[in-house]
Amino acid sequence: MSDRETVLCDRMNAIADQVRPVDLYDRVLQTSGAIRRRRMLAAGALGALGVAITATVVWAAITVPEPAPHEPIQSPAPTPTSTPPPPTMPARFYLTRPVFADDTPGADGWRGIYLLERGNLRKVSDIATTAEPIVSPDMTRLAWITPTGTLAIANLGGSARRILPERWCDYPAWSADSATVYAARLLDDGTLSLQTIDPATGRAEEELAIVGAGNCEVAISESGLTLAYLNTGRELHVASLDPAVQPATWVVPPNWFANDGDRFDLIVSAVSDDGRHVLVNSIWRETTDPNVDYAPGAYRYRIDMKAGAPVYALYQEGAHAYGFFLSNGSMLSRERGVGPSGDLYRVFRLGEESYAIANPYLYAPGAAADLALVSFGY
Amino acid sequence: MGETGARAEAASEFEAFVRARTPALLRAAYLLTGDRFLAEDLVQSALARTHLAWQRLHVAGNAEAYTRTTMYHLQVSWWRRRRVAETLPGAVPEIARDEGNESDTVARLSMQQALLRLTDRQRAVLVLRYFEDRTEAETAAILNCAIGTVKSQTAKALAKLRATVPELAELDVRR
Image (cartoon, rainbow over all chains, first blue to last red; front, top):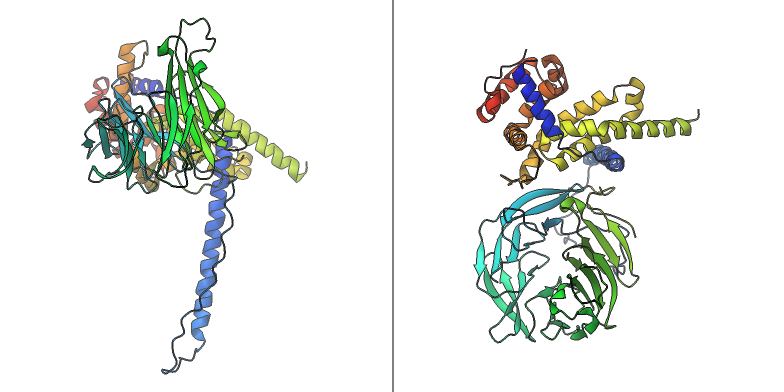
């Protein structure tokens, strides 16, 4: 091998040395099973097609009498509609929003956007912002609040950016069909206004509500109708445009606060459509208060607004992470790790307080599509 | 040994094969894809096909060759190229890491970026020829193409590399 070929070989080995060994055995077995099932399905479909062609040929050979011209054309009899079964907790859960943004920007101030595909997180885009963008469910657009309080909407790659003047509150939310952005705006008189924005035009189309004064940190439910916020008196409020949802308030316990006021911060992370559940992150910083024996870090609480109490706490070292409530009665809570590969997702079945951990790298058995592959059984 | 015992033994052998060979396969896959997750995906897909054919392969004793060939086929197959093209970003800035030797890091990154500018087939040819040290005939057999194609793809790939990696500027095509 010549010197230059050795250089090429050495360089390739240096690149290959970057790979960390991983255990693929379980994923291989699951993929193998999926391939086998697909092949069986394809073979079955081919057989069915053959049978159908044969049947068509035979049928065509049989003379069918034409209906007399005067015979009325019969419309098909209406088929009775059956009552759908009541919704049940799925044994398998599919993550419906498989796009995530980096929690923290890189050294260049950019955040990566990752797509969960075939059980792996893959970087698909970067966007130059220090704020955390929220990705639309159809994975075509981003919405985020800039450090100056303006609301930005852009395509996934960052193009076609539209800026709405200040002052908007963290975090915006997308409607399920990705056609609307919900965001709360802090008005000059200190009140909050929940608004809908057309992401195509970047125009705030409709003002839905004005709720009580609060901090400019708001969680909006999946329906876009219910929101939770922390007011300046450290009270957690839930308000909704849905008349079935009662307003609720929960006073944050005084012992959550240390003597030095800088220690505590509360971030409202998510609220359920029915307004009953709110996910908050309490950030505990270093303190000189000798009466505080908590380790610095973030604690995540689900607040049951009906019971008026926190249900459980999860300790998370470092900064806060996010979560959201799902319409099937579950709560998805993200556990931050080292980069996107270290994240875990805890999925809580509300009411039973049980949870399962879904690793985003888990390849879902039987999943035929490329997306939405986080799967587990309770 | 009964049928159940033979099946259990085959399963055990497959597990040992996967655990033993995955690191080496991942190294080649990383060179082929330029992405750690894509590399895992590629090796996973190749090993899954090996699993389906394991009864035949482990008797013949050529499981690794089959897996590697499958891996290269998957990487250069048209449907896979199309899928990747839809999701890879145009240019992703690298976040600097403390690698100790700065010049080595620069050299590695420039080589890595140069490899990523090649087509899948050109990259596969280079990896087979210079990383796995295969002959032109072996490379042609694995990629299921003519030796002439291997030669032309190698020449084109090296020409592109020469333009971006100075140390390889006078690299000739190996016979």
